[in-house]
Length: 349
Image 1: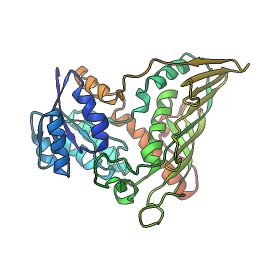
Image 2 (image 1 turned 45 degrees about the vertical axis):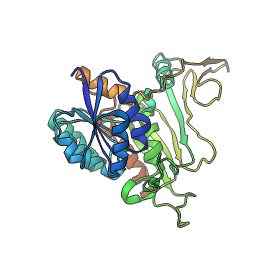
Image 3 (image 1 turned 180 degrees about the horizontal axis):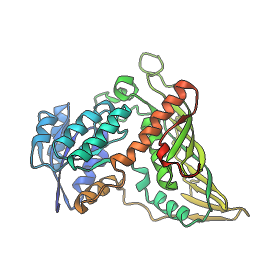
């Protein structure tokens, strides 16, 4: 492919702040069309970026002009639309979480393989240049073998996320539409990141996935989790914690720290230096990578993979290992026991 022709299904905030602007400024992309269940929203995007509006997403998928689609809808619709797109012969970039059940995730991977199409899931942290730099340091052995880690990600929640006047953010709190809360909205990014940084897969989790504080308009606790605390054991022997929260009010937390046999590597734990390496003598080495260009890296990776005819970095199969971990965390919390996941990746037992 020399130029990728894109359709966008779902024109809410994630499409408006990431997918559409980054597609529009990629020299090898042409935006063809849009679908949204709110027609005026799709029309606004067509007017801004060019292209046409489709009455249904089926109409968009039937258009032979379109090579690939971004799926930017609520969680429960990811599997249905992604699978339909893959069977229509379209490559798919689907927002996270991949789907709301493990069976759906597996069916998406199977649909991609059966139809010879590429499926990518929109995990963006691993494309952050700071984390790219930090991974090179880990790979170079600056802190030796990683023994433990601590990852935190949190904010005040998704209220106010919408870019228009419609109050549609509450679907995040609806268990039927979202299935999982802070764990799949935020924690999922850290699971993908940890697997990427360590070149290991999660093989066991012990978790508490709970609703502690966040309430809906009716004053009742929301239907999904607002906090998740997880102990993760990795395939190569490392072990650590991951915490995700929607109740860090007035602040944002995003640190990831690795502790090894020769020292520690701290990412986004300091307001001045995004990367700090400490050896066992207490000596610090601070890193300040070049500022980013504002692009997420997700769109560029998807488009470049299609142009080059290769699997995207966060393929459906890769994302499936993250989803097994997420559902394992929920099961662990429900059953109050440790749960094994991704056992085929174990290398240290």
